Image (cartoon, rainbow, N blue to C red):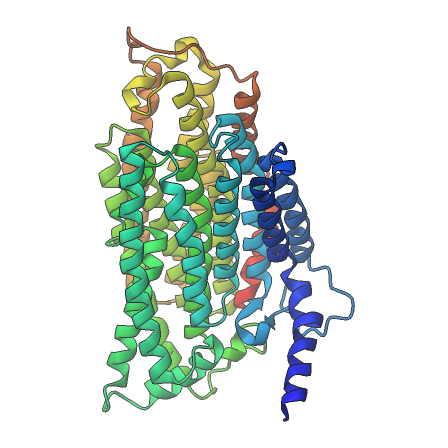
Amino acid sequence: MNLGSLITGSLNDTLAVSLPLFRTELCLAATIVLVLLCRMLPVLRRLDSGLVALGGVCFALWYAWNDLRGIPVAGLPYAGADAAGLVRQELFGGLLVFDSLTAYIRFLLMGFLALYIPFTKASGIPDHEDGADFYTLVLGATLGMCLMASANHLLMVFMAVEMASVPSYALAGLLKGRKASSEAALKYAVYGAGAAGIMLYGISLLGGLLGTCHLPSMAAELARVVDAGTANGSVMVLALGGLMVAVGLAFKLSAVPFHFWCPDVFEGAAAEIGGFLSVASKTAAVALLLRICFGLGVSPTGIGGAAATLAEPGLAGLASTRHFMVYVVGLMAAVTCTLGNLAAYGQTNMKRLLAYSTIAHAGYIMMAVAAAVALAGVNVAASREAVSAVAFYLGTYLFMNLGAFAIVALLRNRLRSEEIDSYAGLVRSSPGIVITTAVVLVSLIGLPPLAGFVAKFLVFSSLVQAISLHAERPLMLVLLVVGGLNTVLSLFYYLRVLKVMTFDPPPADRVGGEFSLVSLPGAVVTALVVPVVVLGVFWAGLYACAQLAGAFAS
């Protein structure tokens, strides 16, 4: 093939295949440019950068919804359809991939931004002067998170993680002139740089040994290397490289033992930033974890193509790889969940409590990821259901955690404090905000009839299914017991907040008046809390969307 043919083929692939399926990210990129122009050009400085950002996000959300529904692009040469009618199509020469998981995570992230921007406008952070900078960083980080969800190459994995992380470091230090905020940004950047360096070294080990960084090609080569045996030490190097890559993923998930940054950053940064990191960053990190686990642990023909058969060459090698990944993810999930709940019990600051709650919920989600990977080698349909459980959990987690941080931020504006003790006796002056807080916290526990109960039920169901199908049965049994015990443990610290709000007498030196839900901040809280109630009863629609995401494991 000559140079002209190569260039022509690349242009055709980019223009006819890749760009039509990259519209959501292109909308975000165009919105970033517009917001920056609002900052740079004097004639545009009168425009509200938040409204400009919200308009661009609405366009991106519309494209994401069309992709999720599987509406085909005219003239697009599809590579093949999965069980949900969506397609798996590699983009930009295999660096990215479009499939049902990509479409679902994009939709969640765009939906999150559509709720997050009005929340920040109601809370007053950022102010008009810093608005353009703030929304540029938020949109840039979200763009990186979209790339994390669709990464199909280890170099793109690293670039996407860094693209999502670097703006987040700046966001953590948004509160200029406050020592706690600057300290949070510095700690976040130092931990992030260390995790990125370790992850990059792991990628170099894997890519150097396997001769490729393209995930489907790596899976085929990985099966051959593992089947060849351990005589030349290759398996040990692969295991070491895999653990180093896991460091970067664990950092983004705030999983133990790479969680130390999370409580300090959440406490030092504004509550609005904590909500962004807790929901959007977690969603993208879980999607990337699924992408890497299935990309390296399942036969290339088993994702988006013909199902793998037991006689397929290299199946034994991939089974060993899956076994390794399941135990790494599963054990990390159990420790993460337990430490998060235990550490949350003694917290006096609401943001630190929610930080440890975020760590605990990462553990619950990772349990379902471990079950999905374990089931991939036993029953494809059951594995698909486990991925659907993860996707549903992420959808409900968006409303629960963003609602929790919204309540903290808006109460901060009224009470001038984020300490739990400052909430004492709120039920007497502001019963509405106490009720909404109760709904969110009870849902985070996982009690019926709220959305958190359905999410946890589906996660535990995936573990039960793995046990019944003898997919890594001892580990799945341990995870089920640990998950159940931690759910009981979480009752104490969540309900302690409600006890302070309802039974403790209000402090004599309280600053600020009552918080009414009949206001703009109250409307924002209500808009976030109502879905938590509705999805606890009418959850079939969200679960149908989650099943689309699960189809990527077919």
